[in-house]
Image (cartoon, rainbow, N blue to C red; front, side, top):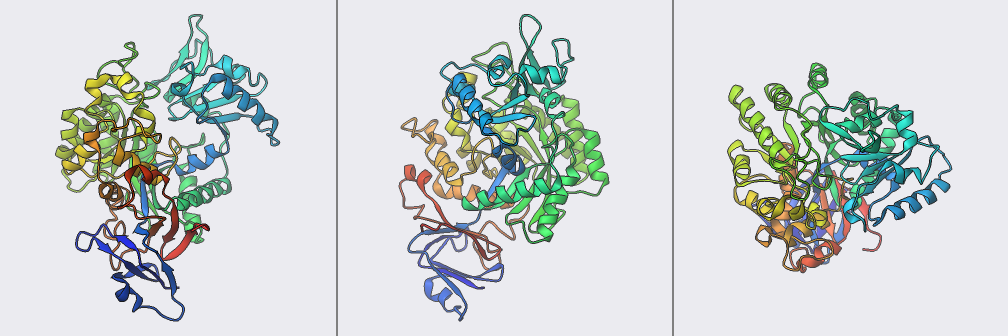
Length: 542
């Protein structure tokens, strides 16, 4: 069915025709863009008409980095986000267990953040023992870079103070050489590798349920890191799940898979099977090699060049040596794979740029579109490296909501003023696609736009915004959630702007986003989401 949307504020992101009032869709493509008269001329007997009533019509949102399957997987766990004390976590967990009719072996939860506790300390085994002493418990921190297990799980996994530590990770030991239950970075695999993996049918159910939530937020394209989610590390199974959904017409969101594969041998096996960036179609494509190189700021596992301001005993954790990073980057680059490296700390970012430059020097290639995911703790030199290397900066503006209160404590004011420099990167001509890192944060795009534009938490603090000179315009933030996302996946010729012959992926908001006061952007809602020319989400209250 053809669709005409008219009487609106169409923000096209097309430099040649930035604004219009209407759009006509034929099939899965945009057919006409212009004023109401022009698009209504295309009306036929069975054309669906949508009166926008002055609301904003934008290109469909593109989340440039999240964990879609992990979002659905953790959605079935005990939700610990927002809880403000250890005791509150214990009590909520006890209540959840009472209602757990399935009585699965592991009790799992995610979302705790010690920075929100009235006593800001990490959870430990003894806290979880108060929940259960006869079932294994695993509670994952909000960032996903730290977990804690109870005494039963430690005994079940045969982990003691004499267990060998894991390279690129660490499990904490107390003064009596007893594990505290806290596992960081690569050491978490000691736990994860002993958990059951879901079937392909269960994975497909996770994908479709997560996509429904994404559509309600106006997200039509997702760049997602899924391949290393489960203990079996069966990336073929994950890819097959996506491909079967696509082939059956049941994949409602366009997927660009950021391929986290763990180590060089696994990656070489992946290449030997013929997988390469760009393989696939408009609904499912293989994207970059994803490299997980350090941790998170909140957990103090982001790898810094100097010790943490609030804990001088650590610089964080680098999950890879320089040689390991060099090998992965070189192998990907010479095999025409795009690369996306998780870097939050400045030390690991410097190491990553070193690896990228070595690879480019050995195998010169333009338009590689390699990038740094998160790009948080930067320096003047590192900001300039993005421009020199022509690297993408994958940004999660919603991180400001949680990090504004801790960043200066963690790294001091001097280092902080060069970090989260969203506007500086744009002014330098760096491509900055925005995302959410869901389930670390919910994938609410309007919250992300609000944070980028105001530099405030969702509670509106600080009043003038943190590093207010780094505020971006609303149009720049929209571009980063649409046009820039398409660039990051080499798809700028098919989506990301509203233009004739582009894919008909669109989102309608409940107000005019360019006219509304910036502090109200976070409260805006999605009224319609259109993918491939089909209305796939409609707010029944619109």
